[in-house]
Length: 193
Image (spheres, helix red, strand yellow):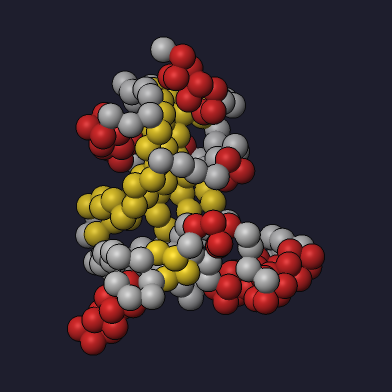
């Protein structure tokens, strides 16, 4: 929000009609952006056009987001975020670059994987937060404010295709394990313990 009036308008909407779970215009813009970059097909773009008139079925199931709102400080000058996923005593990470003319990194599809891109202090911090939350799976998004890591989102899930190319993972003593791994199997193992 740029000012108090915009914030109040959003608050009235949140506690009135609420927000749709599906942004049809945002979806078509993102599909078009990915199509221009060669990251999706013309068929996918066409599906997005159809979604302008016929929303996906999940929108009816989920309903509208109503009765709450939260605001978050905008931290400028970040060209990426770092997503660290911790499952039990293991962690893996990706670096997501922001979209052109945007501030968002999530969902953009421009992902870097090399181990050298990640600061072990961020990985250590991710383990600490995961352990305090006593969570099975914790995905954390870090951005930097004057060199200091800030968490802008915590989630319990992640999209598999974005993480399969990870070259390895850290254990909770920050030892690096090179090679393919199965984080979904880690979750099953945790459930069986």
